[in-house]
Every structure is written in C-alpha cells, then in structure tokens.
Length: 101
Image 1 (spheres, rainbow, N blue to C red):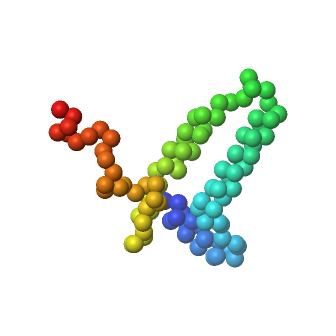
Image 2 (tube, rainbow, N blue to C red):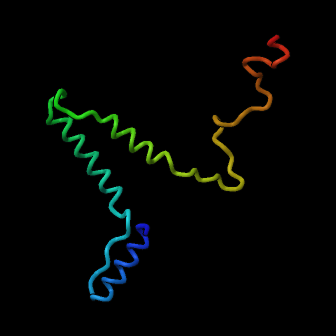
Image 3 (spheres, rainbow, N blue to C red):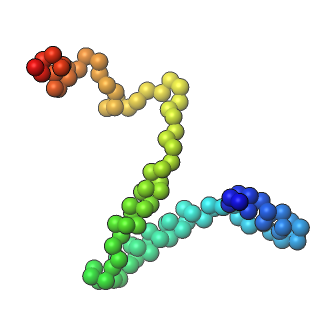
C-alpha cells in the first residue's frame, strides 16, 4: 500500500469519527529540510570544528534525491538562452575529421 492509499484510508477513518483528517503526505518536507538546514547553520556557529559531523554525506544524499526528478520539457516555441544556442556558422575548435589527419 502506498502513502496516498494510506492517507485516503486515514481520511475516511477520521471522517467516520468526526475528527479532522491528517495532512497530505509530503506536506512538511520542505519545512523539515529548512529546519535541518537552520540547525546545521546553528551547530556550525556554536560547535568547535573538531566536534562537528561532516555535512558532505547529507548534502550528497539531498542532491541525489533532488536530482532524480524528471526534467520538465520546454514549452512549444521556447528558445534556449542565447549562451546555450549552438551557432551553425561557428568554426569547430578541433577541426573536421578530415583536417585532423
């Protein structure tokens, strides 16, 4: 059973009892990440450097989690930023394969 199905069961159960339903799954995720970031910043100020936990593992895990999202396709008629455009007339830096010998 996934989180959404469990949430629907919990909402139904709360409605039967006349209670308020639980929040949607993932509602507090951003808040929790911000609180974690704020705690790490606070810890960096009040804790000596030798006693701090390394943050690299945490940062890698968050970046890997956020990096797994599927990219959103560009809207129809969207042009890339001028710096990202590939110029057709620009000379190739390495030359053509025939020129490389």
